[in-house]
Figure (tube, rainbow, N blue to C red):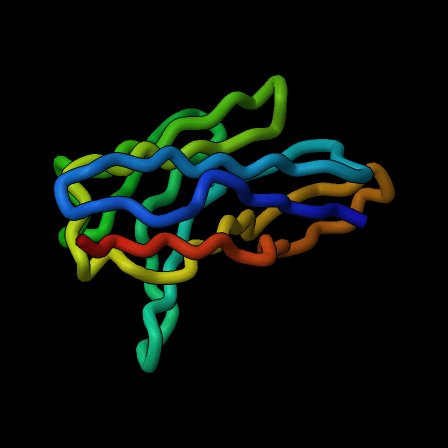
Length: 121
């Protein structure tokens, strides 16, 4: 079993910053790309940012220049630094890895439970 646990969500005023963290644990042999997705009320889940094991990154146009994704391969963690937050960034943010290889040599896709980010004055 592999788990992803997010932390760092909360309430922030427009223009403020938050830092989300996600830690992977369990029977991990290696982890491929990791990413953050979000789902606002009444909307579909959407990609926010991804990062490969080689640190190549990809961002949604709506967050480019404001959000930064990074990872620590030794600790199996991924972080999303969110600056200049806007009310439209309000959503539940989910951590994901679409390719984790377990010690049983099984590939899995894993989602975290989500953490709520609310941007409001």
